[in-house]
Image (cartoon, rainbow, N blue to C red; front, top):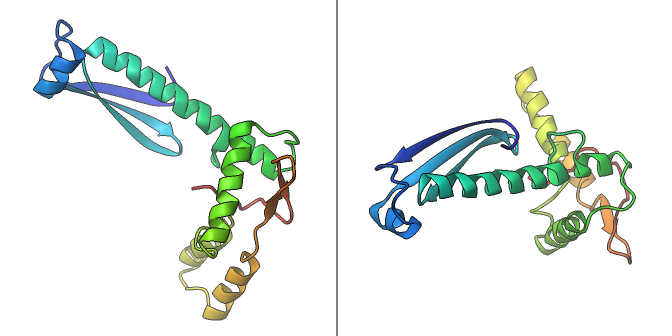
Length: 171
């Protein structure tokens, strides 16, 4: 079964004799909870027989696990974390595509979407621990420091770090 713990419970009966469509129409749903996945609790709800629901749940958890191995900021062995440390020279196609999309959205949104926003988030966490807000000047300085993308996409579609990428975050 995938990473983390999981639980399962059926709602409105659990009739393996029925078809998936019949269970759907009668409102028979199976809920599966998994944690931790993607750094949080993931709940999968499937209508159908318990056998089919368990199969679908297993596929969903496997896909989330696969994506987590590529994009997680919580797993130091993920492709994203290794790339941020300069350990990945030939990233996967999915990684290349998502990084290109992230860069495009940073430009399109005028910086409202910013993969380096983790720098500002980290400062707010420190401020919370200290019990005092950062000054407006400090926040303005931080915002200016992340205004420009920290990476570019080369002619081969590979993301290349231009600056410190340690605080990049795709969440």
